[in-house]
Picture 1 (tube, rainbow over the protein chains, first blue to last red):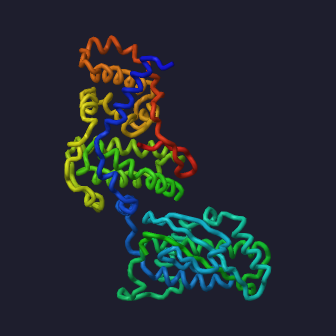
Picture 2: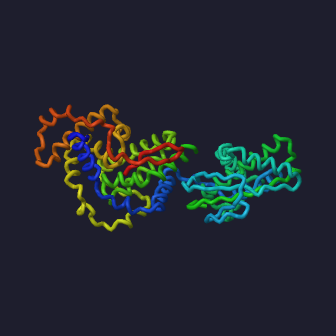
Picture 3: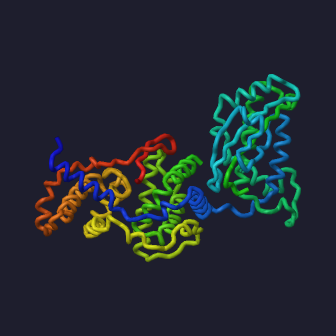
Length: 216
Length: 202
């Protein structure tokens, strides 16, 4: 049986719960609006460091090509979720957040080898059995890339100020490249630890990332 | 990076509730700017973020609480962040059709600390214990304030209008029998971040 006191409490609760003022802005804001505010705030709070250049891109690309002798491939980015055929059955799928706040879904697969089928299986097993995102030291790779840039790129070649490669690179781009390169290094190290000759094995894999809202 | 990932998750989940929190207290014209300040402060303090979703959400509303207080103290000044949201608001005063005005006025007449506790529980959907953390006061203090506020509101909202004077309210304080944490219409739970259950604002 409900006591008068309980009824009184329930009535007061109902009155108080219904007393909030109108909030038309919160009701009308779209998810995109709110996500944009969150991303803008992040940029305002943690502005990208100046002075980074697309020379990084050159250095990273070269490193990835070199890494293909062991393992690795740059991740292509897509503007919508039109995954490539191999990505429909990727070996690993993970998500991460870029400096802008944009969230990426990345898929890695399409593992191949020009010289050692066993290395393919070892690579796929590594992707399946490990949290590559947790293992990848992106911060260290970003630092390494910046160091390479400060010393004139991986090959020491100076780039003129008006060269497209000398233009500032976004923090998102830097992060994405560093992540891809860090994963490539992980795979290379794993294969070598298992006794594979990574130069001879010629392992390669593909990556595709979907990062709506990213600042490339 | 982990703190920033958790913060991104909690902000994504809580941004609308934070906007509502600001709008309840400052109105739509100022809410977006203040929300932007809350978000910037959260990102700058990401290293202080509690590592589970529930605590992180309370931490976030604590920042919102302080930012709202600062905004009230300083008067408003516009931030330079984008104003995406105001285009949705046509500037009309939606309060004109607001049925809760009398109750809200009664809440506004409470002492400020009591009124804010009532708002945090009944407008934002927190338990009294959670509200204590948002308001940065001991839980026991929040419980006693909540009971006191309810007693005063019960009297001031009585149909016959026999609102008690201060002495009578004080006398009735001990009779406020509602357990502080027994808040009917407890908000639904949802999952954020690392699987922590969070009570969202209504």
